[in-house]
Image 1 (cartoon, helix red, strand yellow):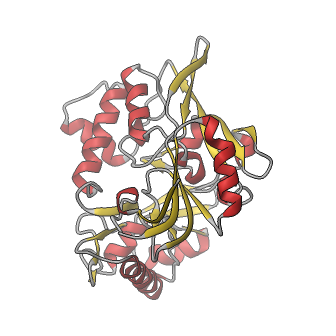
Image 2: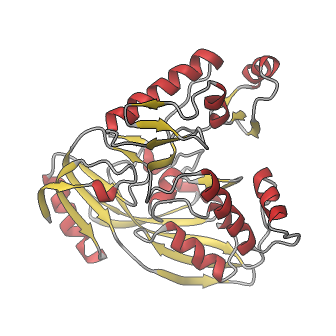
Length: 335
């Protein structure tokens, strides 16, 4: 265990130079009991994956555990599916590439999303018409209090839009150690999302493979989204809001070009479109800014602090609400 002050600048994609009191790298399952003991002595604790969905607004007064559990293992297969276990500390993109290179279908639309495998069920990550819940078979986690390992089925994870039981009932009570994914040997490609179809056409591909879809998604993301290795950011800062059909009918009357999608709970609106229509693309506050190519992304443009980014996010929320009457919810975890 490393003692205070330990800088987290290299462990969050906003590149914010904040400190924590103490820091542990979880590299082996055998460390879990030791980690549990340290957590019980700490004023508070934080399990960190890739640090790609977190905004530090101040130093963290507690223990940070960096989940570095590694490994990808084939655990079962049948004629239709293959079951891969990925340890929580595996980089998500490395896992996606492993699947794509072996022609295992299901996660290709989620290419290049930053972060680790262990974070994917917590947030139920999604992009381009696909959510990770569609491929998760089970999640194994360590109960900090009882020091026991448990495995939850997909249904027990209570997945929703950027939601899961791990964000609520089990928050701060467990450490995810591994995720088992159910992937298909006979991929049914999801290319209905407009920009993917357009990108495939631009790539002169008429009969795409899962690698083609993955390459298309990567090309799209690289063209629109800032590379966190160069420009500090946490990807999509806000969730796409879901409104009732009644609210949507009112909005579409006054804003006929409103970008929207069908949703089981109503109508999902494109948060990036709402922000852009407010004239906020490229808007800056101190060192923080709304990205000039993708309004859904807030960036650390010039030595911003976490409070600068939060103030910018609040301004975006207030401006969108004033224009559309729609409340944007932050997708990023603010500490």
